[in-house]
Length: 432
Image 1: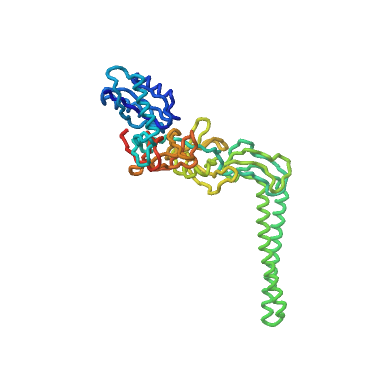
Image 2: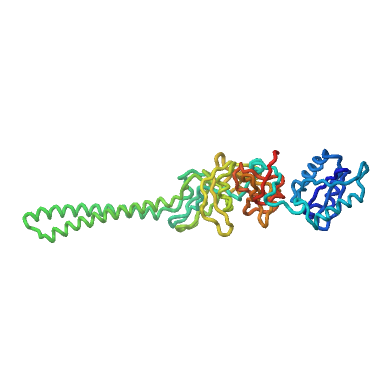
């Protein structure tokens, strides 16, 4: 009596005839049965005893380890074939027993899929061994700490322009000179008015002093004394007003000299010699070169990711500049769904106005696309909880694209055998 070992595949849609031919090509003793009426395909091979069972079963398991239809353990069929090759009638008799298994009471493991309590052999790995170091990206530009349009503050003709586009400036350097003659004359007039007021105050004080002397002998009425005291008070107030007017006039004169508000470079010049300018008329555009910042537009669902990310840098034309996060805007842009993130250069900075992208290394890494498993309409992975498999849904995961698991890096993930298990199924974890 020769023992013929067979292996059953329950899901014919994954096990094609070409699969069976491939198995037969690997072992010329393998006999391939045709499909049974209940939708099963039986694969069998003759062996003298049990020595060949493990080799065939191991081959079948490895060849199907990433399928939903990993073969069940081999089951023995008995055929009286002697030493001659297995003949067609014997194969047909075994196939007949398979037909009976489809229509009558059969071995439970060959009559149904694995139940939730069936133990499935799998292999697992910690998440940190599976994820790949992925860099995330966001569009970004290098922004100046200050960008100012310098405008006229008084009305006057432009007498001279002292700078040109591209010229570097220090704070306080003169950009242009306006005609100041009218403002100088106004200053001189207010100063003259102040001198007049000072003289009037001196005279009023003398009159008040004399009035006080006469009031002791009652040679002056109380009303006249009060009037002279009032004159002194009014003239003193006028002097204060004259002083304010002088300061205003001095400021107007100073405004005729256009100066740089900070260390900068001239990027635009609108002022022309001889032109008449009025207050708020733009004359120059200046950009501060010190302490530039990078402004990135990061998708709102990646904000926590960039905050915990590593190796943040600005990339442009194949070059890199390390960055650090300065500020994150809490406001989400309604049109793009992104948030503004401001970053500073930790070393040398690139040119202000440069466009590029900010990149950072995802601290948790990304699961390869082929590690994702679909259950229902959700994509995710199977994690190990005790001796059970739990399906962890990965929100926003897309088929064919790497995804962030959102799990601790020491989480054990089912790798081999993941396609055939169900949520809550018991696991037999074998060593890698």
